[in-house]
Length: 391
Image (cartoon, rainbow, N blue to C red; front, side, top):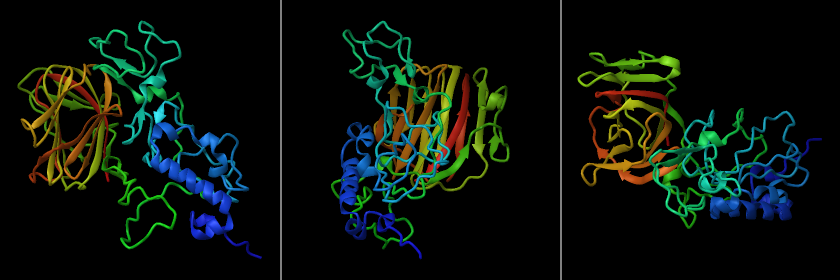
């Protein structure tokens, strides 16, 4: 005799409510809570709401707490050999609909919407004069106002390195158990498809519409970790005493003095996705002039100029043609830079912290698909973990 499939395996449908009314109501209320409340209220709720998360008869590993918004239908079995991965550190604020791409590592940029609450990093009783906890990058010129406490905003020149809040050996959970009902995804292939009744759909219009700056990436469109320097992918356009080399798994752009060039351009130029998430890790070892990152999508130009020790510029259609940010010295420090572009507007992040939002980048149709990294002035720059994700 074949055992009929539990209707809740298809989601929180009317049949599920009929079969398991008490659990379905709790699960629906929990998912609604995760959809409409801010992350700082929901991020630690899961351990108190296990009856809503796990339906009757669910078998799960001791101590397992799933991500916000996940529920498991009655009768589900989470295999004992399933790799749970390690829990995210409590200091991370993670919205229920945050998307961590496959293969994500702690040194990769935090997905849009995910951030570290600085006040959570300080131990009880910390006062000015005590050593800063792991994770803080404090510029020597940073000035803390009199009476500053960990609950106050961080002064200019103080940032957080998200990688430092993860313990050594932390493992990322990539795939959910087979029976998990995850937060709903938008229909992609069939415009007439509909999410089953009683699902909270944050991509649809209405009072809980998902912000455009945290749309989910669909996966890497282009990536190069620069563990090697592949000349079939990049054209080395260096001249004079400028050079691009690959020591220790990073690209090094070295220009000993002005009048030389250390530059690469992508060989395979093709139009970009209309909306994309771009990030890379960069360390400005030395220098006092410009390092340019230039990306031509076919409709826009995203140009980022680094002016050490403390400034960057993003080309823009407003003001003087750019927006400039003084961020405190980044010389000698690895920083992850993230540029999230939707409809010609750019959200700018450093180390997971939002610097500016909805920057209107330059409209340009020349050189569709071209990518440049250019050191045309005196400087020594390291670069790796370059990724472009289609949205």
